[in-house]
Length: 120
Length: 120
Image (cartoon, rainbow over all chains, first blue to last red; front, side):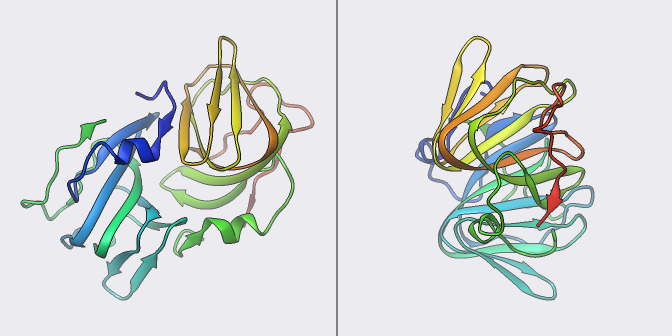
Protein backbone atom coordinates (compact mmCIF):
# COMPACT_ATOMS: atom_id res chain seq x y z
CA UNK A 1 0.00 0.00 0.00
CA UNK A 2 2.34 2.68 1.23
CA UNK A 3 5.12 1.58 -1.10
CA UNK A 4 3.33 2.77 -4.20
CA UNK A 5 1.96 5.97 -5.61
CA UNK A 6 -1.50 6.76 -4.24
CA UNK A 7 -3.73 8.52 -6.74
CA UNK A 8 -6.48 10.17 -4.72
CA UNK A 9 -9.04 10.28 -7.53
CA UNK A 10 -8.47 6.64 -8.37
CA UNK A 11 -8.97 5.72 -4.74
CA UNK A 12 -12.16 7.77 -4.43
CA UNK A 13 -13.55 5.91 -7.44
CA UNK A 14 -13.31 2.64 -5.50
CA UNK A 15 -16.05 3.38 -3.00
CA UNK A 16 -19.27 5.32 -2.66
CA UNK A 17 -20.49 4.98 0.92
CA UNK A 18 -20.50 7.98 3.20
CA UNK A 19 -18.83 8.38 6.60
CA UNK A 20 -16.65 5.31 6.13
CA UNK A 21 -12.97 6.31 5.92
CA UNK A 22 -10.69 4.17 3.78
CA UNK A 23 -7.02 3.70 4.59
CA UNK A 24 -4.75 4.60 1.66
CA UNK A 25 -1.33 5.17 3.23
CA UNK A 26 0.62 4.88 6.45
CA UNK A 27 3.25 7.26 7.72
CA UNK A 28 5.01 5.79 10.76
CA UNK A 29 2.10 5.14 13.14
CA UNK A 30 -0.20 7.60 11.41
CA UNK A 31 -2.83 6.82 8.82
CA UNK A 32 -3.97 8.72 5.75
CA UNK A 33 -7.62 8.01 5.04
CA UNK A 34 -10.05 9.15 2.37
CA UNK A 35 -13.69 9.70 3.14
CA UNK A 36 -16.84 10.75 1.32
CA UNK A 37 -19.37 12.48 3.52
CA UNK A 38 -22.86 13.86 3.07
CA UNK A 39 -25.43 14.88 5.64
CA UNK A 40 -24.84 15.08 9.38
CA UNK A 41 -22.39 13.04 11.42
CA UNK A 42 -22.54 12.76 15.22
CA UNK A 43 -21.08 15.07 17.84
CA UNK A 44 -17.95 13.48 19.26
CA UNK A 45 -14.44 14.15 20.46
CA UNK A 46 -11.08 12.40 20.36
CA UNK A 47 -9.56 12.72 23.81
CA UNK A 48 -6.06 11.66 22.83
CA UNK A 49 -5.41 13.17 19.44
CA UNK A 50 -5.80 16.05 17.05
CA UNK A 51 -7.52 15.23 13.75
CA UNK A 52 -6.73 16.80 10.39
CA UNK A 53 -9.33 17.36 7.66
CA UNK A 54 -8.24 18.38 4.15
CA UNK A 55 -11.15 18.97 1.78
CA UNK A 56 -10.53 17.93 -1.82
CA UNK A 57 -14.01 18.42 -3.28
CA UNK A 58 -17.23 20.01 -2.02
CA UNK A 59 -17.87 22.10 1.07
CA UNK A 60 -17.54 20.67 4.56
CA UNK A 61 -18.78 22.35 7.72
CA UNK A 62 -17.10 21.24 10.92
CA UNK A 63 -19.45 22.33 13.64
CA UNK A 64 -17.73 23.19 16.90
CA UNK A 65 -19.66 24.10 20.04
CA UNK A 66 -18.82 27.80 19.65
CA UNK A 67 -18.59 28.22 15.88
CA UNK A 68 -18.71 26.60 12.47
CA UNK A 69 -15.56 26.00 10.45
CA UNK A 70 -16.30 25.92 6.72
CA UNK A 71 -13.82 24.23 4.40
CA UNK A 72 -13.73 24.20 0.62
CA UNK A 73 -11.37 22.41 -1.76
CA UNK A 74 -7.72 22.96 -0.86
CA UNK A 75 -8.47 24.00 2.70
CA UNK A 76 -7.52 22.13 5.84
CA UNK A 77 -8.31 22.34 9.51
CA UNK A 78 -6.99 20.57 12.58
CA UNK A 79 -9.56 19.78 15.26
CA UNK A 80 -7.60 19.91 18.52
CA UNK A 81 -7.74 16.91 20.83
CA UNK A 82 -10.66 16.94 23.21
CA UNK A 83 -12.69 19.43 21.20
CA UNK A 84 -16.24 18.36 20.41
CA UNK A 85 -17.06 18.52 16.73
CA UNK A 86 -19.69 17.39 14.28
CA UNK A 87 -18.98 17.37 10.54
CA UNK A 88 -21.85 18.24 8.21
CA UNK A 89 -22.15 18.52 4.43
CA UNK A 90 -25.13 19.51 2.31
CA UNK A 91 -23.63 18.06 -0.85
CA UNK A 92 -21.12 15.25 -1.13
CA UNK A 93 -17.63 16.08 0.10
CA UNK A 94 -14.39 14.27 -0.59
CA UNK A 95 -11.83 14.72 2.15
CA UNK A 96 -8.50 13.41 3.34
CA UNK A 97 -8.12 12.60 7.03
CA UNK A 98 -4.92 12.29 8.95
CA UNK A 99 -4.65 10.87 12.44
CA UNK A 100 -2.83 8.21 14.45
CA UNK A 101 -3.68 4.62 13.66
CA UNK A 102 -6.60 3.14 15.52
CA UNK A 103 -8.62 6.32 15.90
CA UNK A 104 -12.33 5.54 15.75
CA UNK A 105 -14.34 7.85 13.53
CA UNK A 106 -17.05 8.47 16.11
CA UNK A 107 -14.60 9.09 18.95
CA UNK A 108 -16.29 8.95 22.35
CA UNK A 109 -19.79 8.87 20.85
CA UNK A 110 -19.85 5.41 19.27
CA UNK A 111 -23.12 4.33 17.71
CA UNK A 112 -24.23 3.10 14.33
CA UNK A 113 -21.97 5.43 12.34
CA UNK A 114 -18.87 3.84 13.83
CA UNK A 115 -16.92 2.46 10.88
CA UNK A 116 -14.41 -0.34 10.54
CA UNK A 117 -11.58 1.10 8.46
CA UNK A 118 -10.94 -0.83 5.26
CA UNK A 119 -7.71 -0.56 3.29
CA UNK A 120 -8.09 0.28 -0.39
CA UNK B 1 -1.84 28.71 13.37
CA UNK B 2 -3.44 25.33 13.70
CA UNK B 3 -6.61 26.79 15.16
CA UNK B 4 -7.70 28.34 11.88
CA UNK B 5 -8.57 27.26 8.38
CA UNK B 6 -5.47 26.82 6.24
CA UNK B 7 -6.03 27.69 2.59
CA UNK B 8 -3.25 26.02 0.66
CA UNK B 9 -3.30 28.39 -2.32
CA UNK B 10 -3.22 31.43 -0.03
CA UNK B 11 -0.24 29.98 1.79
CA UNK B 12 1.63 29.19 -1.42
CA UNK B 13 1.17 32.82 -2.49
CA UNK B 14 3.19 33.93 0.54
CA UNK B 15 6.55 32.61 -0.62
CA UNK B 16 8.48 31.89 -3.77
CA UNK B 17 11.77 30.25 -2.80
CA UNK B 18 12.41 26.64 -3.68
CA UNK B 19 13.35 23.77 -1.36
CA UNK B 20 12.37 25.69 1.75
CA UNK B 21 9.36 24.06 3.45
CA UNK B 22 6.95 26.31 5.35
CA UNK B 23 5.03 25.13 8.38
CA UNK B 24 1.27 25.64 8.03
CA UNK B 25 -0.28 23.29 10.58
CA UNK B 26 0.54 20.96 13.44
CA UNK B 27 -1.18 17.68 14.24
CA UNK B 28 0.00 16.35 17.61
CA UNK B 29 3.78 16.17 17.16
CA UNK B 30 3.57 16.10 13.39
CA UNK B 31 3.96 19.03 11.01
CA UNK B 32 2.22 19.87 7.76
CA UNK B 33 4.54 21.85 5.51
CA UNK B 34 4.18 23.36 2.06
CA UNK B 35 7.08 23.51 -0.32
CA UNK B 36 7.84 24.76 -3.82
CA UNK B 37 10.55 22.84 -5.59
CA UNK B 38 12.32 23.08 -8.92
CA UNK B 39 15.54 21.46 -10.10
CA UNK B 40 17.48 18.84 -8.22
CA UNK B 41 17.66 18.36 -4.47
CA UNK B 42 20.33 16.25 -2.74
CA UNK B 43 20.37 12.53 -2.08
CA UNK B 44 19.53 11.92 1.56
CA UNK B 45 17.63 9.70 3.96
CA UNK B 46 15.70 10.10 7.19
CA UNK B 47 16.81 7.29 9.49
CA UNK B 48 14.01 7.69 12.00
CA UNK B 49 10.90 8.51 10.01
CA UNK B 50 8.81 7.99 6.94
CA UNK B 51 8.10 11.13 4.89
CA UNK B 52 4.91 11.85 2.95
CA UNK B 53 4.81 13.88 -0.26
CA UNK B 54 1.47 15.00 -1.72
CA UNK B 55 1.80 16.86 -5.02
CA UNK B 56 -0.68 19.68 -5.55
CA UNK B 57 0.67 21.22 -8.75
CA UNK B 58 3.29 20.17 -11.28
CA UNK B 59 5.19 16.90 -11.65
CA UNK B 60 7.64 15.69 -9.04
CA UNK B 61 10.08 12.85 -9.50
CA UNK B 62 11.30 11.20 -6.33
CA UNK B 63 14.41 9.37 -7.35
CA UNK B 64 15.09 6.22 -5.34
CA UNK B 65 18.24 4.14 -5.81
CA UNK B 66 16.36 1.45 -7.71
CA UNK B 67 13.60 3.43 -9.48
CA UNK B 68 11.94 6.76 -10.02
CA UNK B 69 8.56 7.58 -8.48
CA UNK B 70 6.69 10.17 -10.53
CA UNK B 71 3.91 12.14 -8.86
CA UNK B 72 1.39 14.49 -10.45
CA UNK B 73 -1.33 16.60 -8.83
CA UNK B 74 -3.46 14.61 -6.41
CA UNK B 75 -0.90 11.85 -6.00
CA UNK B 76 1.00 11.02 -2.84
CA UNK B 77 3.89 8.80 -1.89
CA UNK B 78 5.46 7.82 1.40
CA UNK B 79 9.23 7.44 1.39
CA UNK B 80 9.94 4.77 4.01
CA UNK B 81 12.40 5.57 6.77
CA UNK B 82 15.97 4.90 5.90
CA UNK B 83 15.40 4.89 2.14
CA UNK B 84 17.69 7.16 0.16
CA UNK B 85 15.83 9.56 -2.08
CA UNK B 86 16.40 12.66 -4.16
CA UNK B 87 13.47 14.78 -5.33
CA UNK B 88 13.72 16.41 -8.74
CA UNK B 89 11.39 18.63 -10.75
CA UNK B 90 11.84 20.05 -14.23
CA UNK B 91 9.12 22.66 -13.73
CA UNK B 92 7.98 24.19 -10.48
CA UNK B 93 6.08 21.84 -8.18
CA UNK B 94 3.87 22.68 -5.24
CA UNK B 95 3.72 19.93 -2.67
CA UNK B 96 2.53 19.21 0.84
CA UNK B 97 4.87 17.40 3.20
CA UNK B 98 3.97 15.54 6.32
CA UNK B 99 6.45 14.34 8.89
CA UNK B 100 7.23 14.51 12.61
CA UNK B 101 8.32 17.86 13.94
CA UNK B 102 11.99 18.62 13.75
CA UNK B 103 12.77 16.63 10.63
CA UNK B 104 15.51 18.33 8.63
CA UNK B 105 14.82 18.58 4.92
CA UNK B 106 18.25 17.29 3.89
CA UNK B 107 18.18 14.38 6.33
CA UNK B 108 21.62 12.85 6.82
CA UNK B 109 23.13 14.82 3.94
CA UNK B 110 23.13 18.35 5.37
CA UNK B 111 24.73 21.05 3.22
CA UNK B 112 23.64 24.34 1.78
CA UNK B 113 20.11 23.24 0.93
CA UNK B 114 19.34 22.61 4.61
CA UNK B 115 16.44 24.91 5.45
CA UNK B 116 15.24 26.45 8.67
CA UNK B 117 11.49 25.91 8.72
CA UNK B 118 9.50 29.12 8.93
CA UNK B 119 5.87 29.23 10.01
CA UNK B 120 3.52 31.01 7.64
